[in-house]
Length: 150
Image (cartoon, rainbow, N blue to C red; front, side):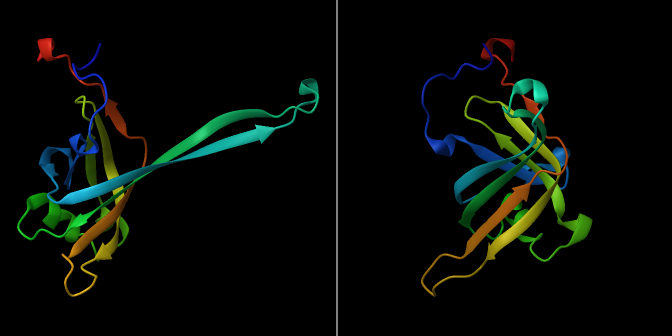
């Protein structure tokens, strides 16, 4: 069985790393929530031999990870994301790695970073940093390693 962690876990055990590429990944300080949306493309058709019942085939996928937190000036990961706020085109692409509680990893290379809340809020709020990371091609999923084999 990959990894050694079993049972339930608190959400904070998920961690995210960002960088220009997979060799330059850093954790992102002060992120407090995240959500994941999978967009699946399913083609449907109605062949005669199915007597009116629909046939389906999943033909495409994408993933969007929305991360919300606080702006932390001086943290390498937080500064990196903040630096993408005004970028367009290929300059808005970077690498995100999601490290799961069991040690498995999902790597999104050349992902599109869309900064959605950048320093706004009430005068007494802590400055926010919120962003969506959208897959750009197939991500790489790596199973957790057994503790015995590390």
